[in-house]
Image (tube, rainbow, N blue to C red; front, side, top):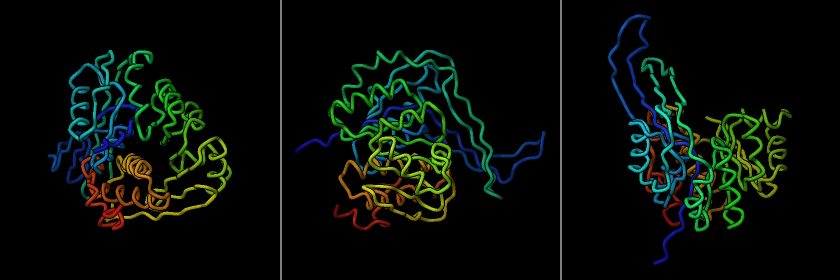
Length: 306
C-alpha cells in the first residue's frame, strides 16, 4: 500500500483557554465559570489539526517554549494527531497563549493574549527538519514566521510542492510573502488593505497578479469568494448557527489544504472548506469542534465517494 504524502505546515504553536460565564461580572466582583475548555491554537497548527481530523497525514515544523505552557501546546497538537517530531524548543520563560471569556447571555467575548518571550531557534537549525517538505503533497504557511517560512517556501519550490498561504492580519512582512504562494487565502480586511480598490473582484485580480494561481477571500458569515483559472467562484457559508468565530478561519485553511492535496476541483475544495469550518464553529472553540470526514460528508455528500 502506498503511504500518502503528508501535508506539512510551518507556523506558531500555542493554546487557548476558553471560559464561559453566565454574564460578564461588574468591576471588582466574582462570577463562577460555567464552562472551561483548553484547546490548541495557532493558525497553521489548527489547520494541521483539521487535516488530521479529516484523516489526512499532517506534520508540523515550528517551535515552542521550554516552559509548561510550551509543553502543553505541543501535547495538544500531538493529541490532535499531528506529527510534532520536527518541533524544536526555543529559549524564554513564557510561551504564547490566549484566555477568552465568553458571556453566555449575549455571546460577547473578552480576549486576553500574550505573545510570550520565546526566542525562535536559528533558522539554519531547521535545515534537517525542512527535508520532509521534499516528500510533502502541500506546504501550509501563515506569515507568522517570515524568515523560516521563506526558507520552507524555497524548499517547496525546488521540490515542486505547492504552497498554500493563509494571511489574516495585514503587515508588510506578510504582504511580501504573497509571491511565494501558489494558493492564497486571506481575510476580507487583509484583501482590502493589500489591494485597496474597493471591489472584492478587483482585490482578487490584484492579489493574483502578485503570483498566486488561485486566491480566496474569506467573508465570515457571507462565505468566501475566489479567483481560480480566471473564474470568479462564490461559496456561501455552510453548517449550523455559529457559536464562535475563534479559529474558524484556520479550520477553513486546513480543510482547503486537505481538499487541494486530495486533488478535488476548486469548486469542491471551497465547498468542503466551508462545510468543515461551519461545523467547527458550532463549538465555543473551533479546534474543539473539528469534524471528521464522515461528519463533513453530511453537508457535502460527494465526499463519501471521493
